[in-house]
Amino acid sequence: MKSIVIYFSLTGSTKKVARAVYQGMRGHSDFCDIAKMSEISAHRLIDYDLIALGSPVWGGVPLNVRLFFSAVPSLKGKHAIAFCTHGILPEPFFPQVISLLKKKDLIIIGMNDWYGSVFRPTLPKPYYTDGHPDELDLKEAEVFGREMVELSRRIDNGETELIPTFPETPELPPSNLPKPMPTLMKEKCRFPECRLCMDNCPMEDIDLSVSPPRFARNCTSCFFCEMICPTGAVYIDYEARAKASLGRVKEVFLKRLEQAEAEGRFRRLVPKEDIDPTTPYYKVFDKHPRYVIPGD
Ligand SMILES: Cc1cc2nc3c(=O)[nH]c(=O)nc-3n(C[C@H](O)[C@H](O)[C@H](O)COP(=O)(O)O)c2cc1C
Image 1 (cartoon, helix red, strand yellow):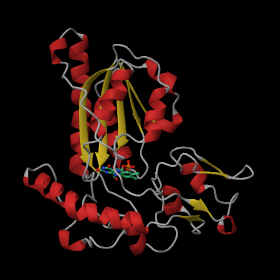
Image 2 (cartoon, helix red, strand yellow):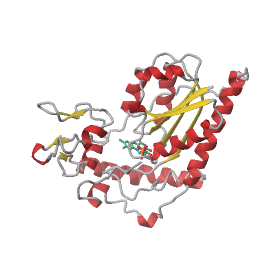
Image 3 (cartoon, helix red, strand yellow):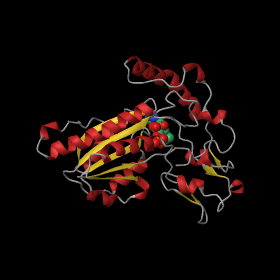
Image 4 (cartoon, protein in one colour):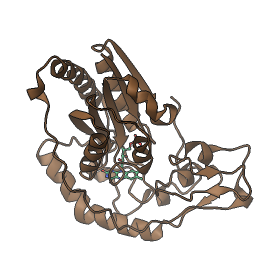
């Protein structure tokens, strides 16, 4: 059996989980690979029998992940698993990922999710789910990877009744939060010495080497370019979005999290009293860069 873990991760949580799932799978597959989505061609997936897809939740499946999958050929009869990391609201991910995988004729044999740390300029910092995924989460992810390989093998050996059903449910409506657009202030930009926004835009939607520069035409509002820019050359007016986001935290998110905690689905790692729900990250981290990409 040849298996692969492919993942997208902007701030590292899904990467940690992907590596743990890979550890679990590797010990039990004949051959197992791991690859960042940006570093593998969609057509290569045809070489594998079991494909594990890992992604953060971005109001559903991030657009770059959906675009990657649109280029994947039919993988009829092969097995797929999907996992994600998320903040407080993972639900929109599942219907989208099921439909994405089924469109490629994959047989979905498992899904899982873990809380992740959240770096959103319009949400509080520290955030309620920060500290995840921790050692315990990663142990679980490793076990999940191992179990999925065993399940895939048993299904291949004829135990098709073990294939779980993942019904295609209607997608949830997209959020109606304001979507402020980034603008480039050329006088502050240090290109070509600095290429951080260009090299890290998940949509590969920034090219400062052309005239005029191509800047965030298909922006997905991840705000990463603004967060990592060391000079403040990327400007985003966060105010309206932050007001709406903090309102949602108060009215929706906190109740969800308390419910998850009461049901034992959420382990709080940051004490409540350490979080200021009225002040967004961008006001706490008011110097540039607001976020430094950690080394490997
Ligand atoms: C653009 C964007 C949208 C997000 N939308 C959601 C969401 O709808 N629900 C949720 O629970 N978390 C959401 N999050 C939080 C991420 O899912 C969470 O931080 C995840 O663990 C990040 O994974 P990564 O570190 O691998 O990038 C969002 C984060 C970003 C950057």
